[in-house]
Structure formats: C-alpha cells, structure tokens
Image (cartoon, rainbow, N blue to C red):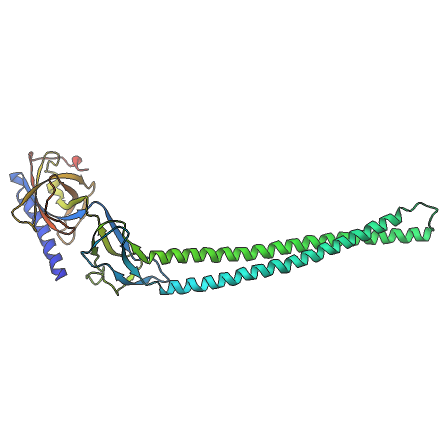
Length: 333
C-alpha cells in the first residue's frame, strides 16, 4: 500500500510537470509538490562495532515528538561489552601504575642511599689525605690517597646508578601512563558511541521513517541497517513550505519574479491558498523515474497559511500564472 501511494504521488508529479508544459502557451503552469519543513533532523545509523547495526526501537511514524524526546534506540550490546572490558582493564592498569611507581621509587631510594654512603666514604678519605706531611708515614699517605681515589670512583658509580634508576623509573611510569591514557580515550570514544545509540529529537514535529534503499519498504524497529543509512526524519511543525520541480524547458519560460502562485491541498479540496517563491535551485537534477529530462527544484512558501492542520508529506497542486511568456535561463538562480 505504501509503495502504491508513493507510485501515485510520482505519477501525479510527473503528470503535473507534463501538464505544465502543455499549458505554457496559455501562460499557466501546473505542478505537483509536497509539504516539507524548512527545519528537519535526519537520523542516520551510527557506527557501532561493525558496519551493520540493529534498530531496536523507533518512534512511530506520524507521531508528534517534542524536542528532547527519545526517538530512536540502536543496538549497543557489543559497545557496552567493549566498554565494560575497557573499564575493567583501566582499573587494573591504574593499579599496575601504583605498583610500578612504588617498585621503581624503591630502586631510586636504594640508589640515593648508596650515593650518600659513597659521599660519606669520600669525605672521610678526603680528610685523611689532608693530614699534613710529617704527622703520618709515607706508606699511610699513599694508602690514604689510594683509598680516596677508590672512594671517588665509588661515588661516581653511585651517581650513575642513581641517574639510571631515575631514568628507569620515569620511563616505566610514562609508559604505563601512556597505556592508561589510550585506554581512557578508548573508553571516552565508546561512551560517545553509546550516547549516539540513543537518539534524542532536536525539534518538535512529526516523525517519518525513511525507505530501505534495497527493499523499498519503510525502515522499522528490528531491522538491521548499514552504518550511515538515513532511517528517520523529524520535521519541525513551523516553517512549512512546498517542494516541487520544474522541467528545464518550462523554467526558461516562466517569469518567476512576477508569476502568481496559487496552491491547492489535496487534503482540503475546493480551498485555494496563495504562495510565494522562496528559492530556485541553481542546477538541474535528473529524475529517471519521471523522464530523461532535467528539472529545477523550487521551494514555495504560503503567503496565507492554512488554518487547517497540515503535515509533511501532504501533496499540493501548484498553479503558476505567468505574466510574461519568456524568461532567459540566466535568471534561474
């Protein structure tokens, strides 16, 4: 049934475009358009642990949601599992950091102690070598000098040992801190992924489900979709306008600057509304489902807004009454 409605809409639109070309000699062009909102939020399937993700829940099509309402939930089971494992590992790595700091600091403390002993020994030998000649024998003086030189070498070794211990401590601690930082960044990324799995509406307005690109049916809860696919749209209740397409041959002959625009909604037959041109696309687009020709997209606004409720997707019949019969292509912008 949904496919049939879509087919009918395209037929009406194609028919309207065809009628527009037939009426060009009379200065009138008939088009078919559709109600859209100038503000919309398109929800795309977020990236999970792989290239496909399941839609666990979606707000019903046509439902009016408020800004801040939850509108879609995607499967986050694997992400939550990865997050739990990463948080457990982070706790273990932080404990390991404390142990590394304690163990390496112990090596530094021991090296500092050895250096102090070497300095004490050196100072003692220095005092001995400072004894004036005549108070000790030449043998003792030579022995004290040798002991002083040995103590000096031991002090240099102790200084090198302390320097090595400090470097080893800093390298080990920094390496562990880098591992912790990488884990923390991974956790933050997983949490951001988890947040994207629960989509909140940014607007107040009706929900519409997008078409599956292969099956040509509406995407619904329980479906597996590919990452990046558009699955639903929320359109703001304000700023409604009409989207339509004009054949490239007609666009060259319509005086959009002065044309009178009359609108009729299929939902409210017999009632006419006036409109105004909001924009014309600067480039044409091909519409293979209609013909091999190219079309300019146009946006039309209501100058007198309908009192009746209108919703995105409603079809609109558009009549363009041309005041002039020629318009050069450079005016299309």
